[in-house]
Length: 253
Image 1 (cartoon, rainbow, N blue to C red):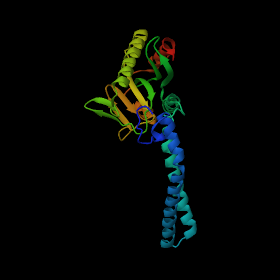
Image 2 (cartoon, rainbow, N blue to C red; image 1 turned 90 degrees about the horizontal axis):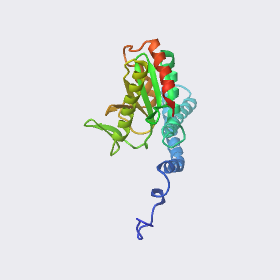
Image 3 (cartoon, rainbow, N blue to C red; image 1 turned 180 degrees about the horizontal axis):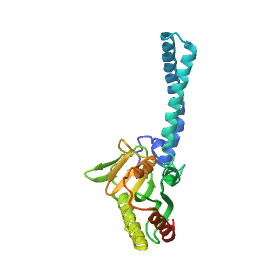
Image 4 (cartoon, rainbow, N blue to C red; image 1 turned 180 degrees about the vertical axis):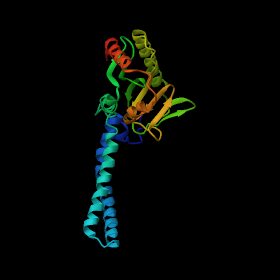
């Protein structure tokens, strides 16, 4: 095998297919160990429930089974949730669909418009453009492997050991280009804030990171971050004009 050793047998799990494929393979192979661990945890829950029942003179078997069921259910939910968090990275779900639903559900009733999949002809494209009372936001979606740490050091963005400038710079430039176009066409001074919804990857505690002019955050936090901006800079007429102009001037990506 090229690059291998004739003296050391190759381990197949380090060769071949994509990281996503191997992640799913190892997840399936680990199902039996997870079930065994769940049984042990449920047994501990049963003992704890039985002890509590004896302490308060309750039905020991019933309370023990109840505790065991709660522990097993919680353990299953945590495992399932951790796997589902990688769905976008594994290509099983579309990040723009998830974020779009969050935005419409949380912002629609607060006077915000959401345009999906827009692009300046021949230039940048983005997943969502949000226009509302507190301003305008450009939102894109991205996903990294579950063990990739997203961090900021000395003002620079890092994805693991790699610089994040190649990701941040195009989004910041796209926000500037979109703002210039909308300001020119509507004669309303517009500044657009770029955001990146991170569907998989290790963000700092709190699920939010700001660096190099870009805000990175969990998809469920995007609408919350927008609503947290105080003060209204756009009225209803301006919001409508900007939305109509964006829908007309920005082609669907």
